[in-house]
Image 1: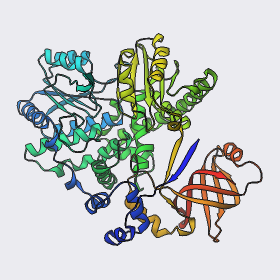
Image 2: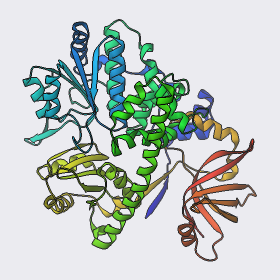
Image 3: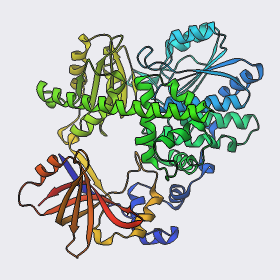
Image 4: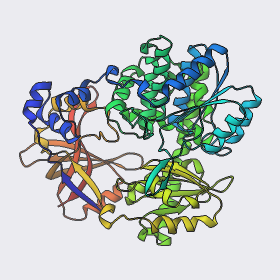
Length: 574
């Protein structure tokens, strides 16, 4: 079920348009994203790296820099430990490249998803000591690694934690008390006492800012780190953090540079996806490049991707890039099967009545549990956990909806988990054995306060705008709103009652539907729907000739000819 509503935020759109040289419709779209005030609008439209906050505002950044500078000077062996997803791998690469270029003696470890699970563990600390490591630095993990950090400290190593995940806490007299690992420095903007103003950086963003601080402390210039911005853009988009303020600037700056990258591995990834001659945008990062990087950590080892980014040989890089693409194609098939099984289980077991869906797929590859959870969440608009049978115990991933803070909900039943962590919208967990699955389902639903209204998907329409007003110039101006992503969604318009003159269906799976549409003012335009024909025909029924839809406009280029079209997102017939 969906509920459509039109944003009605007020401003002087004509004046804003005149001030910034944009169409009043673009000004309205900016206001709908809660960007107000001339300075905020300027930063939104044309913010640069000079608008990024001072990295030394991060709590413990100064101490972390002192430790790193000392380690580099003394030749101390430094080991980087990251997560195995896109954000983790790229965080690792940013630290490795930056520290190596300063002359540091650096190596890396990325946990195996199946063998090691998420993040730093105590065995890694023991191995590091045996291998002569003097300083360990985490990225995109570590904020909850209490025992492993303590182990490393007990063994005489220095530890720096860099992370962006929620800080663990316990309630004392009705108030949250943060619990931090006993590291020498903890760099995470989400700490209550951290003065850094922007809290939504991904793990790679935190790592990049720490390296900016380090380079400044070394008397080096920020521009030396600019080749890393295209990597930071990939991590920021793929970790689905807010594409606002600093993240927006990082992604835009990275996209501007990605086509010029000199990194052999990244160029190979672009090449195998035929993107070398394309203007790469946030869609390509999130749905083409990112999934390839993730596939390695899901089905093989994430170290393969990191070594690709370190590769200098063009032929070797292209071979690895093609292997990653093939792995991702394999992952897609496994995901589709898992989604079908999950939806069947909901129907067969009567889970549809649950406010929070806990789905146990014992034979599912644990690496794709999060993707399946996200797909199911999109279909049923409820928080979803997908659990699988791991090598040791039960592993799971969750994906949430706007009104449900997944990490805080899990904290209320934390004794059911062996481990857990995450954010408002996504989380991961481990259970000791299958006997805990039903307890988890019962208790997470027992403390859920969501109401029926929360399960209605809310479709926010920017402007109720007939297709008659669409022009090529307006579509081109909409590019100033990019990059699109979380908290900066692609603009959505609506048109009531378009006459359907013709329906054509294309695609190997007959899931590309092209409509020839006519407005009551006589404007003709093509409308594209990407959906299976059977579902479309079922919705249409018999005798219906008009479609009311939400859409975004774009320009279709075919054999050098340009034509306006709309991509239909939500619709119903009359």
